Image (cartoon, rainbow, N blue to C red; front, side):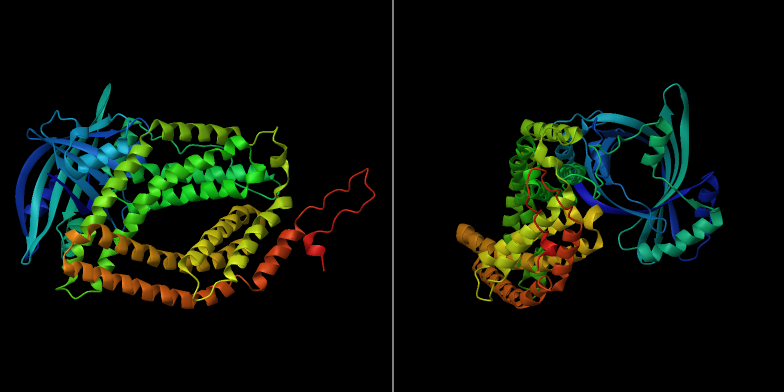
Length: 543
C-alpha cells in the first residue's frame, strides 16, 4: 500500500524529555485526554543518489525499520513557519527490513524510481530513535500525536551524536483546536523550537554536504561585454535553472518544477535564436537538441494544465452533474501518465546525458576567441536585436481584429514572447529598468494572448476527446464537454475584447523612449582610415 499525505507538525528541542512525559501524564489540562501509546525503537536509514538528486528535488528518502517491518517515506523539505512544518510525504510498506527501497510499490516506488533514473541509490546515514508516543484528543476527537524522541546518530570511530526532540503531529483538521494544548506544553516544559529538522542535523553531525550548484562560468552581464559574452551568460543562467528543476520534474509531485524546467528550455532556445549571429555553429547545434527536450516536457505540462482545470470545470456544474466530468479526467490522466513515461524515457536516455554534458562543457569553455562575430560589443547590436523583434510584433499586432483567426493571435503570442525574452536578456545589467518596464508591458499582452490560446487548446482537446472516445463516454459527459467548449469560446471572445487595451500598452511613447536610450548607448563606429566617407548616422540621430 502506498499513500500521499500532508504532514503538519511542531518540532521542539528539549534537554530532557522526562519533564514533558510527566506533564503529559499529569492531566493538567481539563477537557484534554492524553493516552500513552507505548515506546518503540525506530531504525532509520536515509538514502540518496551519488549526485544528491532526491535532495535537489527538495525531498528526503527514508527507510524505517520497526518491529520487523519496513516502510519507505519520501518527505518534502520545508522551512518552519510559526514553528510549524507542513510537508508532503509519500509512504509505502516494504516486504521486509532488507527490501530494496527501489522495489517499493505504488506511488512512492514510482516517484523514487523516476527521480533516480539510472542513478543508484546509496545510504547516507542512520538515525536510531527511542520514541515514546502519546495520543491527544478533546471532546471533538483526535488532536495530535506527541512523540518524545531520543535519537542517536551513529558516527564512524566516534561516540554517536544525540538529539532530543518533542514532535507534535497534528490530526487532520485539528490545527486550530490543538494550538492551546501546544502553547500550554511549551510554557510548562520550557520547550524551544527546533532550528533544524533531523535530516539537516544528521548532515551536520556526519559532515556530509550536498554538492553545490554547478558553476558554468559568469552569469552577470554589463554594458562592457561582447555579444558573445552576454549570450553565454544568459545561457549559463538558464541552463542552471533547467538542471535545478530536473529532479523535481522527475519526482513528479510538484508540477511547478516541470513548468520551470520547460520555461528554462524555452529561454535557452530563445537566447540561441536571439544571439544566433554571435554564436558559433557548434553552440547553435544544441538548439535543436533542446527542442527535443522541450517537446517531451511540453506534452506532460499541457496535460497538467488541463487536469488543473478539472476543479474549475466541476465548480461550473451543479453538484448532481459534476460527476459527468469524471470520465474526462480519467482520460486526461491516462494520457498524462503515458506522456510522463515518455518524458522519463527521454530524461533517462544517453542522448539526454550527452546533451547536458556537452552543453555544460561548451558553457564552461566560454565564447571561442576565434569566432569574430561574437566579439562585437553588445551595445552595438542590442538595439537591433530588440527592435527587430518589436517590429515583427507590431506588424502582426496591427493586423489583428476581433474576427482574426485564432492562429493569428497565437502567432502574435509567439513573437511577443520572443520580444519579452530579448528585453529581459539585455535589460538585466545593460539597459536596466526602462527595458524591464517595457518587458512588463509585453508580458501583459502575452498573458492575454496566452489565455486566449489556452481557451482554443481546451476547445480542440475537448473536441478531439469527443471524437476519439465518444463511443465510450456517456451522453451526459458528451453534453458536459459541449458546454465546456462553449464556455471557452465565450472566454476567448472576452479576451479578444481586452486585446486592444493591452496591445496599446506597447505602441505608445514608452517604446520610443526605450529605443532612444538604446541608440544613445550604441558606440559610434570609427571611420575607416582608407575611406573619405563619413561614418553613417546612428538611428537615434536621424530626423
